[in-house]
Amino acid sequence: KSKAVATPTRTKEILKTYGFSFKKSLGQNFLIDVNILKNIIEEAGIDQTVGAIEIGPGIGALTEQLAQHADRVVAFEIDQRLLPILEETLEGHNNVNVINQDILKADVERVIKEHFEQGQQVRVVANLPYYITTPILMKLLMDRLPIDSITVMIQKEVADRMAASPNTKSYGSLSIAVQYYTEAEVVLNVPKTVFMPQPNVDSSVLHLEMRTAPPVQLEDEEFFFDVVKATFGQRRKTLMNNLARHFKGEMDKQEIRDRLEKVGIDPSRRGESLAMEEFASLANVLYK
Ligand code: SAM
Image (tube, rainbow, N blue to C red; front, side, top):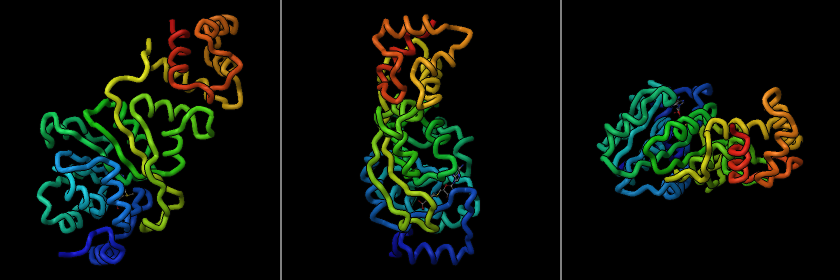
């Protein structure tokens, strides 16, 4: 039996055999450490009952591990040069389907219906192409797909922002957006040396467990996210300053002050000090 795809020697061999050259524009940094992959599989909660979705299988480093541990795997890969390679590296695994498609354009809901059993747990696991980390994750969250969790290798800085708590440097509208849909946790920090080629940024594994019910009750979701963005507009400024600017022409300062008082939020605070529940009361009281 040949070595795992993710060993440095096997990876080099495969790349050489196919004359494969990395495309930086597609965020191609392949994993060459089997231990990291096993950790990811474990953190993702993959077992023989689970349906796994992978984004960007590359030459199959993670796909191979998923195929061994999950019931079934569907992988979206945009680069068609990788298809013949994947055919070879995943040969012998009859529970994997590779779809040659841009994940941002894919109808993921339909794919889930077609490939997985009704009621089966579905978990997304990926070493994401970093140039589109946020668009991919926001698509998966906002489309309200029937998935249970997302476990992804991404830039450390973005992982920190997504999982951040109030009163930290990383906390911002992205933290609220992600944590509205999921419980977010950075589960692993990963050195650059486990990738080929090595990326310029540090990486982390982020685990997102989908919420089954929203964490707060909102009058209007879109309005809530608008208010959150507005309060982080200029980080150094107070809630009052950012809100007055945002609602200019619609609500004057006195009106804003009165409404904030109703929910006990001090207008001289900064956005970065507000927890999700406070943002919810703020948005609900400002909503007309
Ligand atoms: N999973 C492999 C690994 O860990 O070694 C490769 C990870 S590499 C960071 C990202 C992969 O995503 C590449 O194979 C790249 O071609 C693919 N990719 C880039 N943009 C994509 C897109 N829009 N849709 C699907 N796959 C994409």
